Length: 139
Image 1 (cartoon, one colour):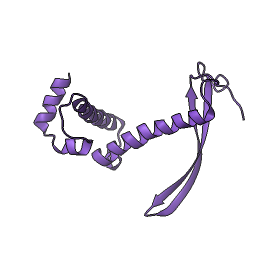
Image 2 (cartoon, one colour; image 1 turned 135 degrees about the horizontal axis):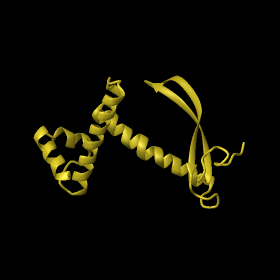
Image 3 (cartoon, helix red, strand yellow; image 1 turned 30 degrees about the vertical axis):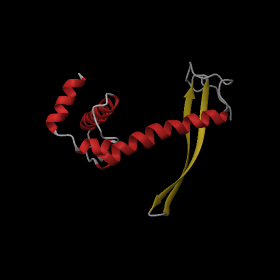
Image 4 (spheres, helix red, strand yellow; image 1 turned 60 degrees about the vertical axis):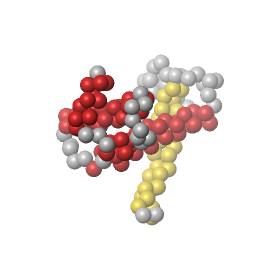
């Protein structure tokens, strides 16, 4: 099926990309559940600018950077998925705090002010006093 971004109500986009995903949810090496779904993306690139293979590489790159990189850090290091805060306001506050902590780490790395090469080791060395000092320095 072919549809233009304008027909889908996404004016200003040049491409409307649908990606078919088949996933296997595993637990201890056994398949618990299989799911299939379409994911939809929009692009401001003209049709001639990228091939389907290049667009697929961009989609994979997005997931590598955001979902694998960010989610892994947020869940494994900050235990975000285990958090039982369910209220919208509380969840937004905690997300902002997590973002702040991750940003402080990246800022320290960029400025060469930490010897820690990855977030968990940096976080273990961080005291409350040092965290407050880092926030004041960043402002």
